[in-house]
Amino acid sequence: MKEATSELNLTVIVVISIAGLAAFFYMTVWPMIQNNVNRYTKCGVAICEKQKNSDGTVNCKYKGVDLKCAWKG
Image (tube, rainbow, N blue to C red):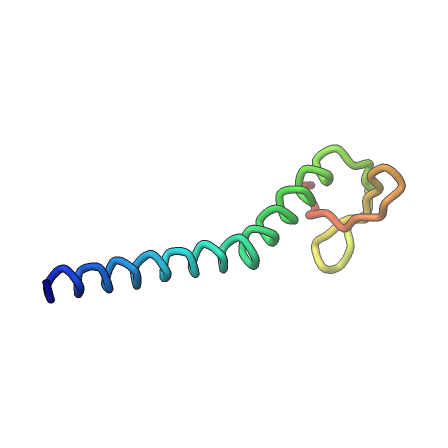
Protein backbone atom coordinates (compact mmCIF):
# COMPACT_ATOMS: atom_id res chain seq x y z
CA MET A 1 0.00 0.00 0.00
CA LYS A 2 2.85 2.42 0.72
CA GLU A 3 4.22 1.95 -2.81
CA ALA A 4 0.85 2.78 -4.36
CA THR A 5 0.54 5.89 -2.20
CA SER A 6 3.97 7.17 -3.18
CA GLU A 7 3.21 6.61 -6.87
CA LEU A 8 -0.06 8.50 -6.47
CA ASN A 9 1.76 11.37 -4.76
CA LEU A 10 4.32 11.50 -7.56
CA THR A 11 1.54 11.49 -10.16
CA VAL A 12 -0.18 14.40 -8.41
CA ILE A 13 3.09 16.36 -8.30
CA VAL A 14 3.68 15.77 -12.02
CA VAL A 15 0.13 16.77 -12.95
CA ILE A 16 0.35 19.98 -10.86
CA SER A 17 3.74 20.80 -12.39
CA ILE A 18 2.44 20.36 -15.93
CA ALA A 19 -0.62 22.47 -15.12
CA GLY A 20 1.63 25.20 -13.73
CA LEU A 21 3.84 25.20 -16.82
CA ALA A 22 0.80 25.29 -19.09
CA ALA A 23 -0.67 28.23 -17.15
CA PHE A 24 2.66 30.08 -17.33
CA PHE A 25 2.86 29.49 -21.09
CA TYR A 26 -0.70 30.64 -21.82
CA MET A 27 -0.51 33.69 -19.55
CA THR A 28 2.95 35.02 -20.43
CA VAL A 29 4.54 33.43 -23.47
CA TRP A 30 1.50 32.98 -25.73
CA PRO A 31 0.40 36.66 -25.70
CA MET A 32 3.92 37.71 -26.73
CA ILE A 33 3.91 35.22 -29.61
CA GLN A 34 0.44 36.29 -30.69
CA ASN A 35 1.34 40.01 -30.63
CA ASN A 36 4.46 39.42 -32.74
CA VAL A 37 2.52 37.39 -35.31
CA ASN A 38 -0.16 40.08 -35.55
CA ARG A 39 2.42 42.85 -35.87
CA TYR A 40 4.40 41.11 -38.61
CA THR A 41 1.21 40.22 -40.47
CA LYS A 42 0.12 43.86 -40.39
CA CYS A 43 3.57 44.98 -41.53
CA GLY A 44 3.26 42.69 -44.53
CA VAL A 45 0.20 44.52 -45.86
CA ALA A 46 0.86 48.02 -44.50
CA ILE A 47 1.71 51.02 -46.65
CA CYS A 48 5.24 52.10 -45.75
CA GLU A 49 7.36 55.18 -46.40
CA LYS A 50 10.38 54.90 -48.67
CA GLN A 51 12.82 56.36 -46.13
CA LYS A 52 14.52 54.10 -43.58
CA ASN A 53 14.89 55.27 -39.95
CA SER A 54 18.26 55.23 -38.19
CA ASP A 55 17.27 52.17 -36.12
CA GLY A 56 16.61 50.01 -39.19
CA THR A 57 12.84 50.43 -39.19
CA VAL A 58 10.40 52.21 -41.46
CA ASN A 59 7.20 54.09 -40.58
CA CYS A 60 4.06 52.42 -41.94
CA LYS A 61 0.30 52.84 -41.79
CA TYR A 62 -2.21 50.01 -41.53
CA LYS A 63 -5.89 50.96 -41.38
CA GLY A 64 -5.08 54.35 -39.87
CA VAL A 65 -2.73 52.93 -37.21
CA ASP A 66 0.93 53.95 -37.20
CA LEU A 67 3.38 51.03 -37.13
CA LYS A 68 7.15 50.67 -37.08
CA CYS A 69 8.12 47.78 -39.32
CA ALA A 70 11.47 46.26 -40.18
CA TRP A 71 13.18 47.75 -43.23
CA LYS A 72 13.19 45.19 -46.05
CA GLY A 73 15.07 47.20 -48.62
